Length: 343
Length: 117
Image (tube, helix red, strand yellow):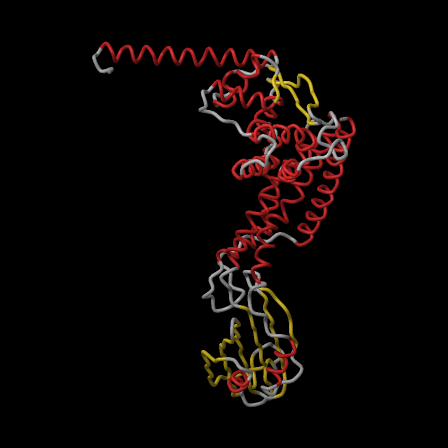
């Protein structure tokens, strides 16, 4: 290749510098092969002036299109489709996470402890959890000596709007017989309530009697308008990233030696097989997110969830897939470097 | 690699680029001007489209690099048809001629029926 157009070859005009910036829309490998001649032709067409706005936009669009271009062979196209599917899954869950950042912060552990203690029950245990569509949840359970139910007053005093409350007398029982039969039935009360505050929902329940009080509270963040669109947006972006990644790798290895192409093929195959379990689980979450019914009485309700895979399989698959991807990128990067050196 | 007419396709810009290169090895701007002249101004290629097509045609073995020149410090790269490219273009010409002949015969038939103006 001639040195034309390279830094130091000669001073470049502002129009040429602008054209070179536009070329950044193209993949690096393509710029290296055709960048200089494209700039020459652009300036020939425009008479050494800055190309028209339409010509500049067209060039950028052609460059972006080039980034998605694959060799017209079955293997790269299949790989691109699989990579798009594999990366769409984490993309969707990443988008969902971003969407949840627009939601109200869930009640803090301290505030939830204070709420339960205001009901007369001390030392609650507080946990974090996730709704069936990935939203934040804080749950608390407490057990103490018998106190009169004052949950409605405590919840209201904490700034919650109580939307439902019910309380009823019940018979409580404890197992005292060796044969497991119930005995020593006594009077008690159960109460349940639902309250809202801002974008938060609280459901709680208590059981009082036989000298004990048990209280449980769940607080979760309501869905915002951003969550499902962000989830779908992440899905699309993940798929595009998978396709672009495959196109970039295919470009680098298409003129590499047979051994290197085989290495990339094997790494990609191993990576796709290993990525299947984690991708399945992430798609499962995606489906649960999209099918989640906000009118569910409880935050954990999912309609017909697909069977879950074992955590060990998912983590192992993720690890192997990540290792295969790193190895593949190293080999592809090396192939690109060798080709540039040879040129 | 020998490509059939089907694999070459019938897209007009591709046909015109091959036609432009059939005459003599030409650089990018030369191809753009030749295509505009051949199509009597109907097809005006932009550099992005041209180099995308040249890249694809090179990959298909229909076009190859002829030479490089530096003019006023700028790279001009000349392309030429390969023998496969010439064969594919000839096939394409024959195919288009058959279609044109068929269309002409059809129009002649309309004339015989008194439907043609």
